[in-house]
Image (cartoon, rainbow, N blue to C red; front, side):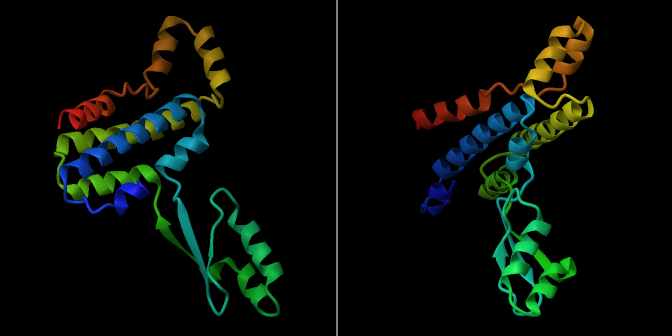
Length: 189
C-alpha cells in the first residue's frame, strides 16, 4: 500500500484496480483470521489503528503508542524516564491526547477506494458488508466461548448437523472471487 500510494498513478484505473485487489486480499486475510479465532490479528486489520501519537500537556515530548501495549504501562515507563515534575504530569491520564495517525488497514483501504470514484455503490456496500461480517464472526465465536481454531474444530465435530450449520453460517468463509476477478481484469488491460 505504501509503495502504491507513492506512485503518481492516483488518477488512473490501474491505481484503483490495484487498490481494490489489495483490499480484497486484506478482506480475505481478515476473514480467514476471524474464522480461525485469531481475533487480535483480525482486529488489527479491521479496527486497531496502525499508528497512534500520544501528546502530553506541557513540555513532555510526544511519543508513538506501542500497538499492543497498555497505555498505562507506557505512561509509567515515560514517567520513570522523565526527570522532576514531568513524571507527575505523565502519570495523569487526563494530560494525554491520542491522535490516530494511521487508521486500521481495512477502513483505510476502503476510504482510499471510495475516493478514487471508480467503483459503484453496490461493490462498496459489499465490501462494508464483509467488513461487518468479520466483526460479527469474531463476536459470535467469542460469545460462544470458542476462542481457538482447535476449540472451533472440536465444537464442529461434536455438533449435530443443525448446530454445525448454524455455527458455519456465522463464519466468514470468503471465497476470493473478487480478488481473482480484479487480477483477471488487470491481465486483460
